[in-house]
Length: 94
Length: 482
Image 1: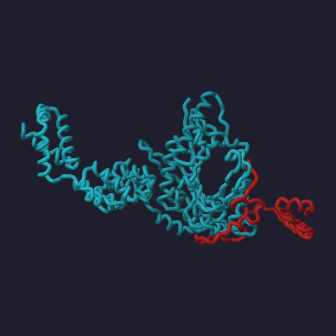
Image 2: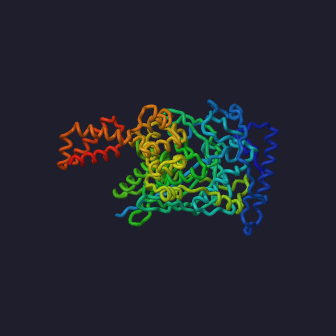
Image 3: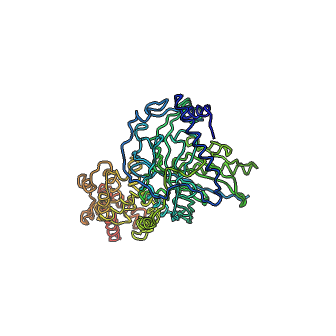
């Protein structure tokens, strides 16, 4: 399963990532590997296997109800393309 | 045509934990936009949510209080949607295996009781707040939106009822019962005005026993709004049916100012949330021993307290309801009773004049300038005949406004009523002497004249004569004259 350079560029655009030529090449290979891995797995007959939501046999991981420091608001909105008064600004919704 | 209104509710309540559901940000209300956010609740890549133990316990506690079965294994799911009030583009919620299901809550409608089925109680995270900026200020026509994620990630329980409610009043009473339950469990602030308790409703009209089309109503921000919106919708749907029309399946928005509902979205626009198990969180398998401990730790429910107030203190049901369905007022009442005074009298004063003052001055019971001790003192002053009920009304109001104790007010203003029998006898004698005509009228059988004479006694004593003693003395004296 191989994905094209155009696919990589399209996904990067959707994710608002600005990639160098080298990075694009690397992600093209890595994403292809991931899809190939999924293709192999999807070939396995699982008709007798119960759906698995979690791969590790672990339950009840929880934390105590304790407040920890939040980010300074300028840090919180630093990566946002637009913000106003500490709020994230987004284009009109409906 | 025979109509039957069918109502089901979906309620969301923020849990009163200190920190958010999956991160350590504070859950405190208010604050400048995004001052209570971190990489987890902002959905930054590579971060991992960790569940808040307290929130899980609270949800199980609520499930138990609502007579639900607690799941032995429960999962979190991702609810995916494209709306900017959640930075992750999904909300962590529960889907096919909620923490608890199949319970009930009974409501009291005065003439009858109704057992309302609880379909499920599940745990999720709250979303952020969108402020729509633009020409109209409303969501339609807004130019852009500002997103504040302080609320995003606050633990939220969702309670879904069976369609067991039959009138808008029942829906309102259900909410009152549920809010009281949340209050008694101490797991939610239940402030509808701050949005920590919210309610959506489904309503349909069955015609001659045939199920109707369900309409969902949103944006009801008070118990009154819930009842008004459902009454409006009930009438609207019946009118369409009578007119031979069909009710489309849709979601409608309650407009509080206009008092109407209008279409928000049609069924065809309904979302496909593409639920799937949250891979970043492991399953919940409540330890049966902990569930048992929680069951044992369940506090007295509002219904139990109501029964107790009626049985133990001999209160009329209506009075008891006023005290019980505001937990803090109920606590205030019990403290006052413990300080002394007739429990029925205390209840009557609290549910009447005291609540009236709280409303008049928009003060919450916990901030009342007069405490349980002051109320007890006031009632004892009345019981001992130091002041009359009429005087107590004014003393209560003054104590409420100034914070001065009732006893202090009475002594400072020289208010204590005349309960000295000799002094009363003197006043009564003088009134009888001064009003021969009224005395004659009374002796001729005009009961009305007695009221006039009593009025004169009160006037002469400047309202301070103990009315019971004065009226006894008056009759005694009049009988002598016969």
